Length: 156
Image (cartoon, rainbow, N blue to C red; front, side, top):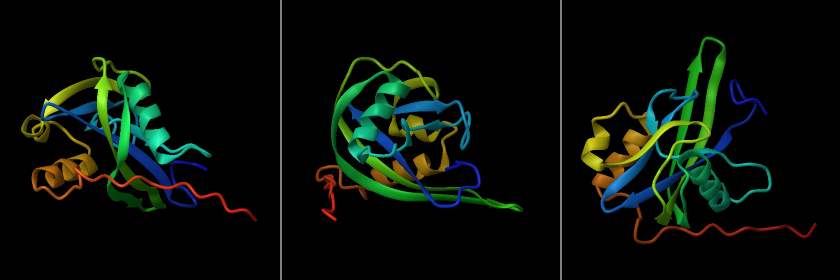
């Protein structure tokens, strides 16, 4: 399915990594939000769980491994222009614990580093990540109780 002007919404996953009160951010190499800072993330691949996708994207974009704890946020990104719906993503944020290693950019990322939440708000952030950080600062995310998605496989 095309990412630009899709027929249906796409599922995107982001890895929220916090270390010592600092958030891991990567600078995006491609649209949407090219050049802006974001949490590591990308598309969920067919047959891949949300948690698996979060770990894969973290490894690809920041060179880190970690333990996915569960979902802490869901947002939507819908942009329109004169031709119709340009992008439509359902964005699922997974809290990832115990990141191992130091961040190094790769894949779709131009840079990767940890920032305090206050420092991060001064960066050129993707709008969804600015909103995510604001939710963290207001205590609106279930960081102590992330939701572990269950995988179902119908028998029909």
